[in-house]
Image (tube, rainbow, N blue to C red; front, side, top):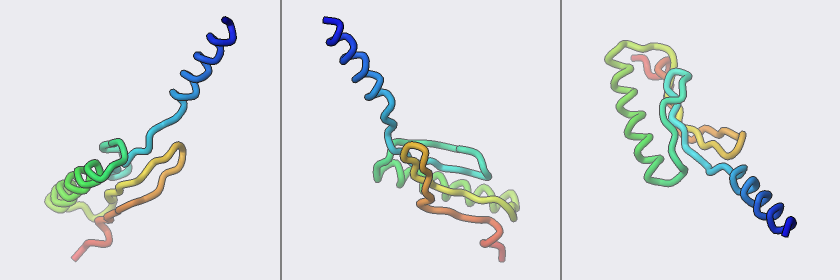
Length: 89
């Protein structure tokens, strides 16, 4: 019986250790929003990023940026980015 308890506990711990992949929206170096990785989440974060671009332009930002990244465990990979310095007219 003790083996069953050990197995159950170890499976619960192993399951909890697995993290789901996420998309993260970063704005001016801060984590602004995070969602479970799926197409709907990416679309929503792109809409938010567009609103943040408009807001940043109204404020006259010339440095900093917005980034959407895919996080898988400890790895972070950029999916989309925008830099206010590159967009100056």
